[in-house]
Length: 148
Image (cartoon, rainbow, N blue to C red):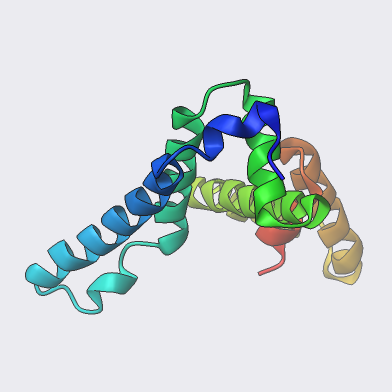
């Protein structure tokens, strides 16, 4: 069943270009790192990053608004509600990793542990997590950041 507004997705082999970008980037990085004798060369470049670059390629190739492109992507991947939840979780995890790399999570936790007595640790952890959730704008990001 073809939808007219998505008709440019189905023309020729054009729809395989993002897949080839993914394979070229992932395989190319693995081969180059293998030539430099890097141990476990194919595990050094993260596959989700190569997949993300393939998705970005698809978004750049297609015509139309970002909303149409995103809805097409979601519809092609599976159930929209589950996939959007997974995308939010992945982006929140990336944001939490950036916050942790900057030292924001550790300094906030250390500040909280410095000023909160040990007998109020569970309440203090709740307050620290609430502060991080408010600062980052995502509850999932705060759980991913504070959980470990």
